[in-house]
Image (cartoon, rainbow, N blue to C red; front, top):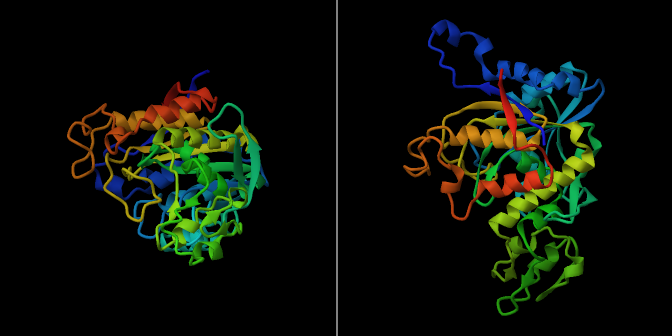
Length: 376
């Protein structure tokens, strides 16, 4: 595969003059416009395009999500080119908590500073009120055979992915591939990403209280049994069982990484790869993703922002920049991992391998692992 271009806006240039500090042109928000146009935004957006700006709102308590000012800047650029942007996210697994419904997602967004006023665009939850609005897309020779792509993603004309690049407990890192493969699919596919089978019930623990059956949207539960054919894979039953009687079979870290790539492939193919533009923000690079209810210390200093039309190249470049950097003190990084050119994310938690996600993305043809970094 040919080499792809990845455009890099470096945030590390030191500014020493008070005169510079008062100059708005040095702001990353201002400089983001140059990066966007260097990456081809002007030719990407056509007048009248409905544009999904995909980001992540975090959860209650998250404090290092992507700042709304960056999202707003991209929204303003889309409008400048005649596009009609909306900012979007999908629901999470489960049925009980705010992250799992459209209403709750918007509540979290508002709490964390994402509103129509701060973004200059409406917020639309792409997979519907409860997370089941998805269109099935079939795959071959991938870790998933069927993926439910969030309906609003497919209905948009273009998708701009604004990714807060972080570590991840299970997939080792979360970049553009994860933002698309997890963040642009409906709830049943999120279940398939993480689990190997539909849930079952431990009859010895089950008290037949009926709490799980009452909440099951698929009417699949008659305690102590779950009818697999009726389960719509929401993972809600486990949240309402006070006896810990629901049995889940979580998949391995390697399988999760491969499934994320498969889901990303489905989204890209269903929508059309030519309709995607990716931005990776290497700012506040925490050891874990923004799904967590708190934000740990960043493991390296802020590096900047990357942009590309190639989802694999931009994630590969992001990893290379992070691993080439010196790690920060007072973080989860070990002394060895703080050294430049060390494997930062793989050192954080057990059984992590960044190569799995990248190699699977290359095998499935998501993009090029070879890239040329273009500084802007």
